[in-house]
Amino acid sequence: MRRKAQVGPILLPIVALGLVALTLYTFATFSDKIQSSSLDYTSVIDSLNNKEFTIQEDLAIAFKEAILSKNTPLETELQKNIALFSVQPGTENFYGKISRNEFSLSSNPTNPLQYKFEMQDVVLTTEANKNIATRHISLCLLFDSQGNFISYC
Image (tube, rainbow, N blue to C red):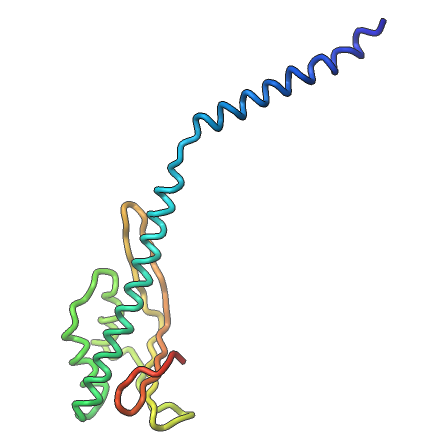
């Protein structure tokens, strides 16, 4: 008889049982920490989204007040109004750019009764636990002649 030909079929079930045992051990000892780190990442992203929304809302309110005040130049009045808002941590870049006049405010070329606000490379940062995130955005918003926010460019 050929004993060498019988070694493979005999080892196959033993190796299969070993792999099944290893798989069961892996399932039993797996730690479900993925859920908690996923929540950390989600909170960081939510915080960035909230900061972006907040600066856009602050800008819309300040712009409306600047239009209603009827003072000229509009950029100076906008800077005064923005300075009244409290600065959230991580949004300092936006408020600094406003105070340094690093933005563009002009009449909309397609509709002269609208104003176009543009600011390039606004940096938002946030931190949750040991996760730090930074987002670079460019703002472009359209306002009507009464200072109401219309849309994004």
